[in-house]
Length: 103
Length: 172
Image (cartoon, rainbow over all chains, first blue to last red; front, side, top):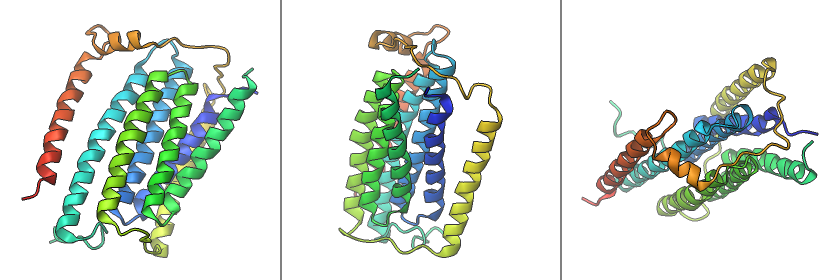
């Protein structure tokens, strides 16, 4: 039995689907951020897999993943700072209750 | 032919990724959700180690599991009461999310399996040699496959992110 490319792509695909589901259904802003992390992570896996299986001599996919991880860290830090600030003003992180910017 | 240990490891990792991803988005306690995300990130790091990208796996554990998860836990502790449950989902919202996720997965899965050109490829027995020296030289070279410009750009991005974080989170 060989470990082929699609055997790794299937968990990654399911991870992305879970991220989409959580992004749409969750109402808590931090839970939405966690769903975004799931989607980013599955894309990172795909970069690495395609690099390793199709172009094992090169390292472009690995560097893309590396930079994606760095950017995801920066983005999460900023988003959580914004969420904490919103909580300080509105006393809630539920997206249905934060309506001050409407109208 | 893959070694037996690799196959067993693959199945453990695949099942862990699938199960914990589903649990991350379905559990109603937000702190549990973050903990399940941690397990997913560790399983991803194991995939990187299996693919011979040791440096990337180490970065995944250090930055994601060590850095981002701590940020999440801090943010959750600052904004939630302990043991607080999320509200039960409205059913139309659940159906919307479920149909979007399943539709996307079905579409991508169909695309993958209908294009079978590279999908059955195996890497058993082959190995790539990616050591730190090579990674460092690629990161700081300006040759054809060099990554100096993105490396510098990301350092500026991180600086902007630090300043932005300080400005946003500062008490006025």
